[in-house]
Amino acid sequence: MEGSRYLDLAERIISVRGVPLTGTQIIDFAEEYNALPFDSYNTIVKTLQARIAEDIAKHRNKSRFVRMGIGVYFLRRLAGEDGRIGFKPWLKPYYARKKPEHPHRILTVPRELVSNQYESSGWPSVYEVLKKGKYDYQSEIESDYLPVVTGVTLRWRSQYLLFRVGVHTHFRSLIGCHSILLRKYVDEFDLDLFETDGTGVTSSTARAALPVLAPGRRSRLENGRLRESERVRFYQVADLLKNKMVRFSHDTGSLTLISTIDLNTVYAQLPKTQRRLENNNANWIAVQKLASVELEADSSWNVKRITEVVS
Image (tube, rainbow, N blue to C red; front, side):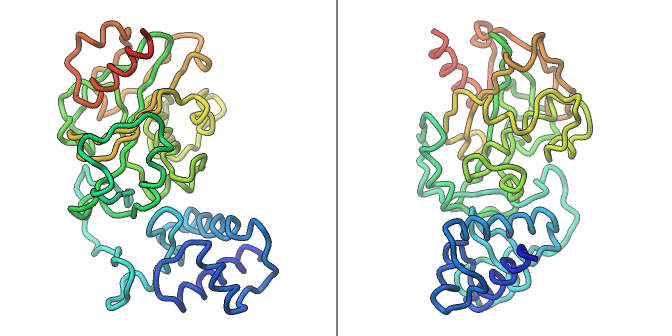
């Protein structure tokens, strides 16, 4: 019952304002017009945002709310109306999507905020850029926006997982290339699975890696529904991530957040990997031998940074 009061409040305020709002804006407007049905307290904004996120995660396309950006929400019944100011209609006409169209709306950021030579150590450097992003379908990304991608490398001791990118991929420019980066678009459901940084990039990284490490249906693994026998837990990924870096990727035309999952503390022996259509001829290779492999640009850049750390 308590949760529905938050949802009813959010629906009422957004409906009156007619534009997408953040949790803070919803509470501010409610307080200004004495519309809060309960006393305000320190964590009310976080509680409201959590209830809306839970509703979207539980009901998906049946939810009364839709996420327009990180922490920005709108009403589904208003999202397709013409003539409103402050948002872009997102409900696309239904048609059978052909692969490799990503099934969910993905996070995009303004191109003007990311230069073609952009490189940075650590993810916090781009958190403010990510907060200015919005969600859209892969085929409908505007020309002045860039998709956000996570690319993760798997490491066990001094060996890294190397593979050839197959045809079953969202990143068609990489087909046939050797790579050490398991890539995934940051999509609208990453924040709903589990959040450690408020952006969804850690969740996206886990969803890219788990289908390769754990046996089972990809849809179950991507959503973190792991069985007791599966040793790499979804919530452990945040603690296993190392070498976090960010760069603009010319190959994929995206802002790419790169990291390494260190499996030393999880596996006593070399991990077995699961065959996936987008990852062909997967094999573990020593870091010293990676320099002799013709890798795609982002992987080659990552190897240079890894080598610098090792040396």
